[in-house]
Image (tube, rainbow, N blue to C red; front, side, top):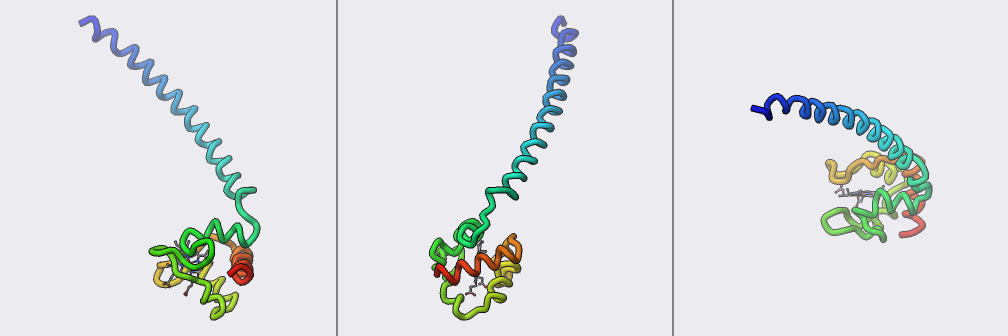
Length: 121
Ligand code: HEC
């Protein structure tokens, strides 16, 4: 019976402690999200075609553009068959019933990637 009257106070303190730490955790998370966004849109994003290709394309088409099994096809042959506009359209909008997703780059970045593809592959 001695434990019962004693229980509510530590419990209350515990709840208070939790509420307080939750508040400060929210603040920290907000700051972390802010700095994470800074990194995403800041210096970490490549500004050249090669870097953009590595970041957005090579995971499916390979470093050499010759494709990765089960991910993306060899795109080197397509470079001769398609215009810049067609390639940019594929990058921005995807292709083949969502088999290749639309890539979240700007039109300028897509052009940089196409320039790089024509130069490198
Ligand atoms: C998630 C994997 C994935 C990513 C990332 C990806 N692709 Fe693709 N890509 C594919 C697949 C799968 C296809 C084949 C689509 C189809 O069957 O029509 C494809 C098709 C293509 C084609 C047309 C090939 C052809 O034979 O018609 C080009 C060009 C291309 N991708 C370029 C790119 C570029 C440039 C990037 C980066 C900006 C990129 N892809 C990012 C998976 C990917």
